[in-house]
Length: 333
Image (cartoon, rainbow, N blue to C red; front, side):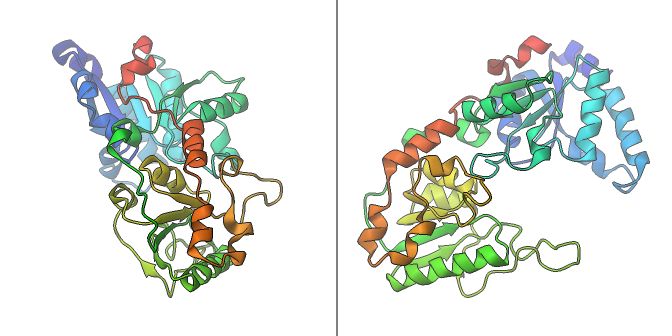
């Protein structure tokens, strides 16, 4: 259909993609653009005049897919009914593939949530061999290609352009994941201790903080109060490397901070709870067990290990390429 015509007259295949921070670097890659037409599938969904819960919306999208017959459908997860439709459609149309790109580090690298463990796609582009091994173990009986792709955002950057700040200043940026009431209490305790050591504390809250509701319409993650909140994007904050120390928990932000060569500390009240241990804790000291005994700034700085944080990044992240054909996707044509 449309893809066949595109291939005949422009020598390009069509890729339908969900617009997301992890898919955009692939869609904007100059080499990929020469080989594919990237069409935002969100726009197609938006203009189908039915609610998401209405089956007719998915039926019409199925018609769109049959008309377009994209070479690839690119998304950042397989969890919703929309992605289930993509997988069912590509199963009936084996010349097309449903591709999912990893968009987070799960819980410090460990996939605790069962629906996230078992792939519902044809190709899964992971951040590194650590995740390839984990997902191959979970999905060894499935016909799925699990690829050591790298983080698409990092893939576009030359890490040699960043450098560690050797100064021992007084500013700390906290980058927590979404915190419930219990975790928020630990967070405030940490802020209190650090302020008493004359650190100036800034916080970039998770996008769900103070927004997401429980089933009973109460806040699942209460709003933060009494702290200096920053509104700039995480990537801008970390690239500028203006903070003396960055502290995060099992969030992907810890890896972001290391990639941009910020000095980091790992603070995770939930690590090793009910037997769940993060991969972060295999390399980093969890200061949750130490912070209440800190008496000086020097003690804080002695907890930082650039060697350990670099080993963590190397263990979890492959510095790869966003050129699709370099990852053997061309063999599926």
